[in-house]
Length: 149
Ligand code: IDP
Ligand code: MG
Image (tube, rainbow, N blue to C red; front, side, top):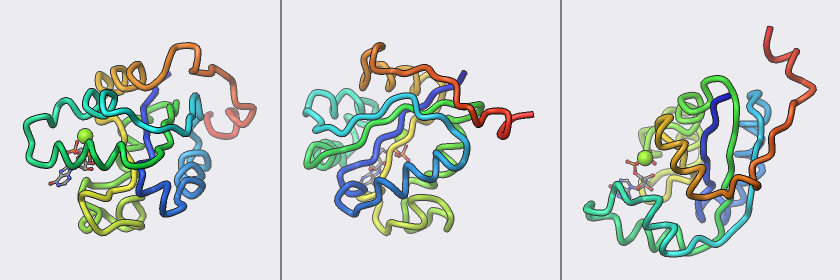
């Protein structure tokens, strides 16, 4: 079953959006597999955003993501990687569609509330970077027959 890595960034935590964000994925019908409330080390932040190392915003991004607690999560479900990206919305909250998390709650690209893996390969890498295998919980939601035919 497909899994994705999501993280509520320090701005999402500070703005008291943790419950609202988790609610959206939970009520959509995806399955929570792992969750931790944590501080992010500089090493983890740099590894996570390694692909952006040469971009002008990299230093500020690492500083921001390490500036306060984040909620790191793994969610599971058919098509969850692409669907979560859709629910999160475009990178710039100002142009993100209403109805998406960024579109509903943000105004600035440097404060876009939540991260979501962008493809199956990055999802695998990011889940392994943020979680130990024993932190991932496999379970069968009893609601499943009401979500899938
Ligand atoms: P994504 O989060 O929608 O996948 P990416 O292009 O992968 O967007 O960028 C990673 C993160 O870097 C963004 O979520 C945002 O926090 C930050 N970022 C991207 N572009 C800019 C920018 O132009 N200025 C400031 N921060 C940026
Ligand atoms: Mg990205």
